Amino acid sequence: MPCTTLLVGKKASYDGSTMIARNDDSGAGHYTPKKLAVVLPQDQPRHYTSVISHVEIDLPDNPMRYSAVPNALEGEGIWAGAGINEANVAMTATETIASNERVLGADPLVVYKPAEGDTPMQPGGIGEEDLVTLVLPYIRSAREGVLRTAQLLEQFGTYEMNGIAFSDVNEIWWMETFGGHHWIAKKVPDDRYVVMPNESGIDSFDLDDALGEGIDHLCSADLREFIAENHLDLSMGRAFNPREAFGTQSDADHVYNTPRAWYMLQFFNPKTARWDGPDADYTPRSNDLPWSLKPERKITVEDVKYVLSSHFQGTPYDPYSSVGDVSMRGAYRCIGVNRTDFLALLQLRPYVPQSIQAVEWLTFGSNVFNTFVPFYTNTEAVPAYLSTTEKEVDTNSFYWNCRLVAALADAQFKTSKIHIERYQLKVMSEAHRILNEADRLVAELASVKSDPQPVIDSANEALADMVCEQTSDVLGKVLNEASNKMKNAYARSDA
Image (cartoon, rainbow, N blue to C red; front, side, top):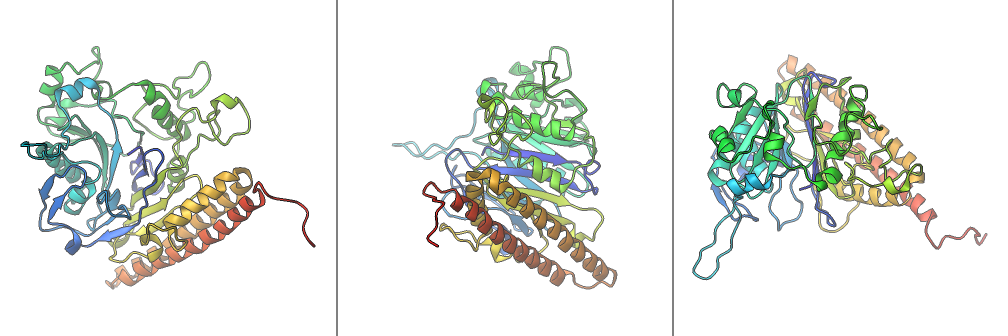
């Protein structure tokens, strides 16, 4: 899937949380309805069959409860997307990336082949459809997430290249697969953030650590031999660069991928480098954009939402701009596009009781026009407004309301923008207020060892009710703006 990922280490975040976030985008020209779900142990399959690749996998008999953002409609598999399990370990999967021809020739993808004549069906490997379901219910740390995924990848292979994020309250790991069976993973430095569009991202890697103690790096056991035998190291005496060895630097990357990384980096580090002009250190087409940087200030939930909603505002490339060179508007693929299915930010907070450490901030549809709503994941219940998405358009569904608001507001961007801004401010302010109150009540209950579950479930319902009310309100306002600018509008009335 074409997606964008942002990872924030605990010393780079505003409150000491680890935060991993990802836009999940559909392919061009279609939209995938999504919903929020909590998967209970009794509902987790013990024998899993992939819809796309037909691979069959036996799963352990001790799954944990976990949240997920699966496809709402049957037919293409689960695609659980992102979630947090009851051990407060988070996972978002996947960021589709790419391998170059030399890698794919050395380690071909494991692709499903249907039966033909006397030749039996050959199952493919695992992929984005499967990974959260196969991994998240069974891991108790971010590192364990990497190791379990690696074991599955080496056993069954994959039919695509993916970037996968894992986090717990202490650390974040980023994993990249390349070819059919190989992989690397790197721990995100605590004081840094990471930007990932749809391309191989890791730009430095310590093979000695990965194949030795594995403190900050992990990889396939045969990686050193694989690199040498297939002449993949292009470093010219510099430190090993996985992006150069395993990834791509195509013309398509320069339009579709690198501009997104460029925008996120210059947003968080405007003074660290020159990002535009004739003497720019980095441009939207630079192949050497940093994978991670220490931000110039600490990063908030609102920052994550803003940057993953970006339509390149403040640059010549903003498709909504009314100034500057018309030919440059929309020249590069935005971060916040029309076909985003969901955005999830998985926040693990160290300063509250374990029962409420995990908060999943979620929204649906085009991020330019939507807003986050938080959800305490330590629960078995999901409010209907967040969990009910059917094939038919329905204003009782957060997913469908987000889609409707976006389509109407986009059509009348200038006049609708103020309504969207006020909506986003109102919802996020109320969300923080509800979270703060629930955090306080749970802390009081923890001090006397009382059950926090009623407070957690009540807060989730209050958050859903609040965002439902505010979304209905803004839908009415942007509908009015769009109605006033219909082509058949006429100024004279009958009165």
